[in-house]
Image 1 (cartoon, rainbow over the protein chains, first blue to last red):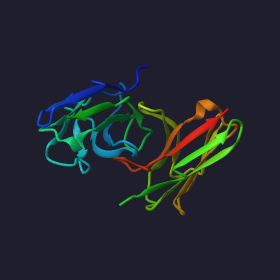
Image 2 (image 1 turned 45 degrees about the vertical axis):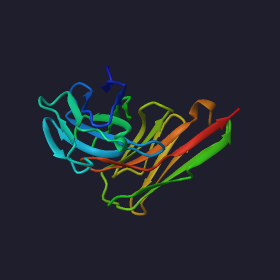
Image 3 (image 1 turned 90 degrees about the vertical axis):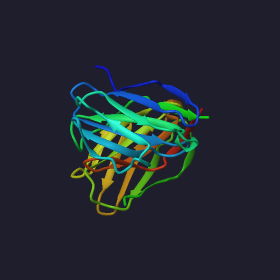
Length: 113
Length: 110
């Protein structure tokens, strides 16, 4: 079956622009996660959804970051007024349920100029 | 706060060698531990998942062990091949998230 997909794969934004990153999880997966990976580092947790409920957003770095999953399937990570320090790869993962194996998408590489 | 450390940061071995990658974590209250590989410019591929109640898992040439009480895991790769060259990431899981180490960059040479 299809894995986790993300779009766009690459995004270049001018400083101050808003961006929206999309994640399509594996069909039937209840849990969905967003991570941010800076160059040469391991991924860092941003936020977690169980169905449509956002149960943990402790990793979101500022109030410019917002995530939603309104129907419990596709999720969007939105970054408002992008800054240079937002440049990173944004990874989405899904799992069958909480505490289960996580499967990752290919990521969206965001470059803020 | 959970902290995950991976040693060594980089490793180069000749083809055919067996090798061990190490991962340590500070908080033993975990659900599971996952090992991933990441190829340059790509996403993460899950290799092995060990539940907190398990001691080890095996998949092909890979064997991962978990000692929750001491906060350690190892990934053993047997008979390494050039195709194993990648960054290997250890991640400790709770119900809501994974906490990653910074990875071990492995190069297997001919």
